[in-house]
Length: 150
Image (cartoon, rainbow, N blue to C red):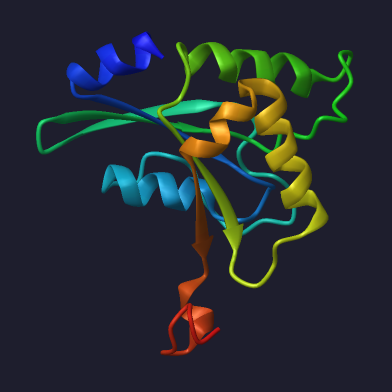
């Protein structure tokens, strides 16, 4: 906890984007960075295959965003290449993310999303729940309504 406090005093904010493939993690990261940094396109297969970082300055804050592929499933075997990538993402976020943005599509929280969330907790510990924000993508599906009405 002391390391988190010191980096916040330095005005550094580390955000980790997590969730299943195709939910809009990269687009969310690009929105935070206010530029197209992470590759994002509609595809039948996963576009993000490795952890990637981007940074920007926001007011007096240095914001670091870590975009991740769908690798937080706790079922990933140690022999799977995703297992090694998960370790790399962990190291890239050291000493740990200040916040995890769990990205999911509006109205589509699935068993895969739940597995991703459990994988995040397994990797970073149960305390990460207090620093997790659920981000709903595909706002256009609300057709002018609000999330509360949905």
